[in-house]
Each structure stands twice: as structure tokens, then as C-alpha cells.
Image 1 (cartoon, rainbow, N blue to C red):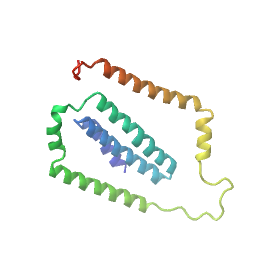
Image 2 (cartoon, rainbow, N blue to C red):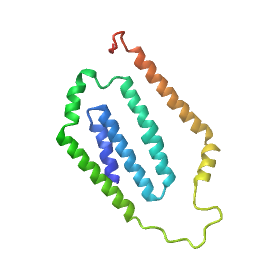
Image 3 (cartoon, rainbow, N blue to C red):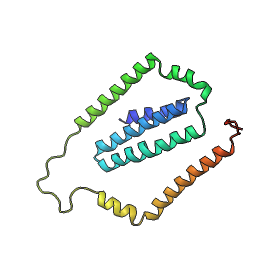
Image 4 (tube, rainbow, N blue to C red):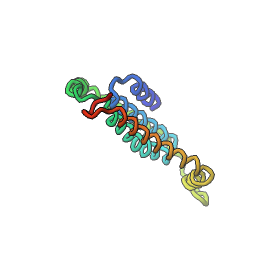
Length: 170
């Protein structure tokens, strides 16, 4: 799974198309979530999928569309290039191989022995994580959300400022 994460990261850097770069980043996020799941951090894996693969990727795609990085004139040629039969077959084969590798890694993990006696408070660390996140770290948590909001507003302002009335960039 670490190799899949690194391959996705390389795909982000080496892709010429920004949408393909975002999709490679999405694959890297899913591989990282699988690593978290294999390490026994189910909450972190779920957060990785929901927050990064969900919200952040939508934000990235929104910015790409807002900045019009995929030019309308180049789309028909790009569609033919991206969705050719050979590339589609290769993409399906790679996706199937990654799915089989993830399934094999998940099933190969040894399960912990049955615990004869459960602790009084259980084994779930979600409550302590919530106390930490919304206790002493509430201010940095909220500051991060404000920083993300300010970034999104700045991108919209910059994208609108550089536009001409005919819809192109100045």
C-alpha cells in the first residue's frame, strides 16, 4: 500500500492534466486510508476518506474548474486521448490489481487474540480524541477552518479579477 501511495503522489507531480493530477491524489488518499486501516486506526481511516478524499478533493476540482485550467478547445482531443481503448483497458487492469492487493493486505493482517475481559471504558479512543480536539486544541482547529475559508475566498477573488467580459483570461 505504501507503493500505491507513492505511485499516486508521483502521478500528482508528473500528470500534465490537472484533473488527472487530482485523480492521482485521490488514489493516494485511498491508499493512505488503507494503511491507516491496516494499522488499526479505523477512525483515522474514515476521517481520511471523508475529509480528504471527499471535501478537499471537491475543493480542488472546484478551483480547477473555476480557474478554467481545462481549456474548452482542447477538451475533444483530451477526451480522445484520455479515454482511448488501450488506456481504458490499462486503467481497469491497474484498478483491479490495486483492489486485489488491498483485499489481500486486509485479509492477511493477523487479528488480535480475543480479549478475555474488556476494559471498563472499552478500546475506542474516539472520546479521548474528541476531548483533545475540542478541548485544548479548539482554537487551532477553528483557525484552520478559517484559513481554508480565506483561501477559498481568495481564489474566487483572484479568478474573477483576471477575467475579461468575453469569459477568457486577461
